[in-house]
Amino acid sequence: MAITGDIKLANNFQLNSAIPLDCKTLVPAVADLANIPAPYVGLTTYIISLGYVAVLKQLPASDFENWERVGGQSTQKQRLTVNTAGQTIFNLGFGVSSVYSLHVNGLQMADDDYTLSANVLTFLETGFTLDPTDHLLLTYYE
Image (cartoon, rainbow, N blue to C red; front, side):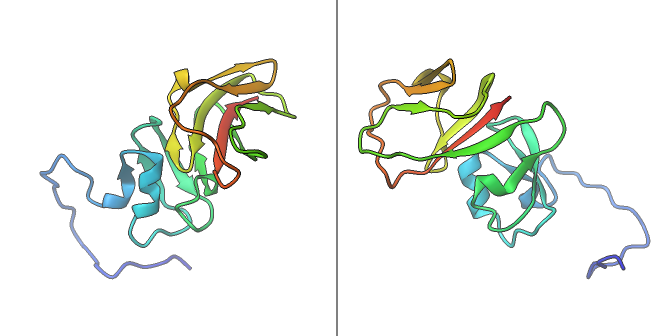
């Protein structure tokens, strides 16, 4: 049985606004996914900073790993573990042809903050030091 809505319309309507009807459908950046009011599994949202639509596969919405890109080239996600304070080199035990995005504690890193060569991800000078409590999420193409 379909989930029915609380407002029933027998006619269409015209939206004369240049903003989304539902604020859940558009966020500026990945970090803003955590601020979506009343998220639900199946929610589709356009993430401006990434330039694509993603669907929420499971809660919580604040965990970017729970979102899956809709359409386009398939990407994979992998959490990276910081083993020691100040670590800048990560030997990836899986095939990465290119990095789509890299997030540290929910914030997307700029492309010039790291390099990828022969499955080794190296952080360049970024003005901060990685710590074992940091959460890194790598989204990549195989």
